[in-house]
Length: 279
Image (cartoon, rainbow, N blue to C red; front, side, top):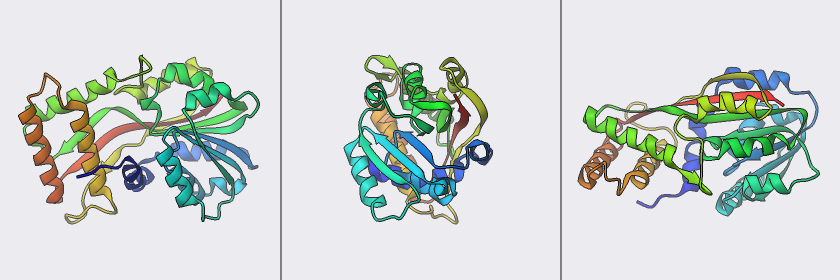
């Protein structure tokens, strides 16, 4: 099977929609001024957060939305998908590494900074102060779907092997490096609760935004079966060649998990956190 990260982002839109913490979103929406907003999104992907905020009425204030992503394919998909859509804000798509974008911005400032399912992949200690510097005084941030240390796949296959595979998968998150520096890791969500104040931010609200993906009467809604297969693909990419796990056992584990998707049986639960506040 060929895997597409752009398709993965589209497939998880419905999952993120139902997972985002309603209390955190309400706290943010209530605290924002009722006036046009300059919004900056880091790691915007294919622009699904724009859809989401438009549907929830947050963009009805008007203003300008700057969507930054380092993947040209994601930006192209966002342009193609949102280009014909009549939105209450003007949208600017930028293909750039977000840190490089922040370092070269000398003039513009934004009222709201968004990062969805992104900061656990970034060097937060290095990045966050530069992102906060892009906000106007009193500007807000909204950081969502930050992975926080728990992945469950049900029903179990072999409890000992399940635990080893998932534990090693989490370890690869902790070992991941960007330009030689660690990323958010497997406990990125809880780490943000300390990193935000250290970078000069104040937390207004925080809460869980767990993914729960399960079939309805043996059928997954939308493209969520593909989403689950792509999650297994992440496992395969991360764990192939690890000396702690015999190749044959990994291949068998993956095949059995794919068979559970075929049968409409596999359930995924992943614990994540949403945080909002201001600087």
